[in-house]
Image (cartoon, rainbow, N blue to C red; front, side, top):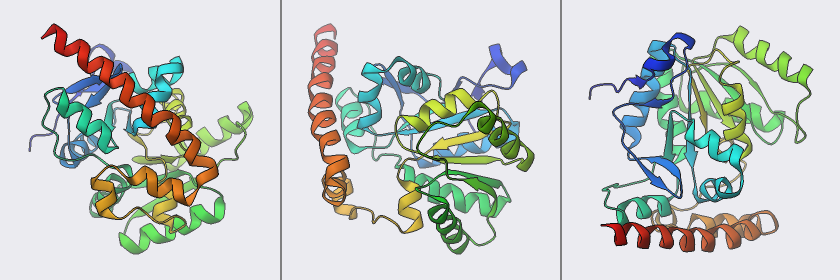
Length: 274
């Protein structure tokens, strides 16, 4: 497959691609969801590493799309991403109802696993930002080294729940840039990770940042992933809500029905114009 080039002629001088050319998008509730797969997403990531243009990728579930309906900063972060890949099956189904032909989602944890294998093969330098605490982050790094022998993890930090001070943010920026990573995985949850990547893209000399949410907990072995059959049927939310009902059940009971109703309005509107 030919590598798609970042679409950045107007901004090439500052090294900041806006979107990836060669990858079609479909607007779902105002969010440009990439009509893509794992292979093409990894091609885009590889091209960013090769060109040293700085971009970021959002693995977006339904929750991210719904948050963007009320949060202009979140919507701007998603619209400014190099790619917004469909992390959840409902986004795949929605795109296909609009006439697309997506066969599967681009699931954040699986993307992280596949690209970590590529990083180990090609010697890419990896930085980790996220995790529940430093112990969990250390377990993640250990797990990644076990699953992807030879992977070069050159740093990591698990931020506190409260926002970093400007001085702490400056220190973190210097630490990351000094390590010269090619790839920075971000696992601090929606919408913090998307906003953080959008804010930090100009400051961090990292070709690829990728927000993957709960992937840090999954790969560290702290939280089990839903069975494959539940993932394929769009029931992962039910599995995760059963694990953390107090935190996740209210979120899903709000976002899932709201997504269905909002998308139904978009679908009817587009059908009426056809």
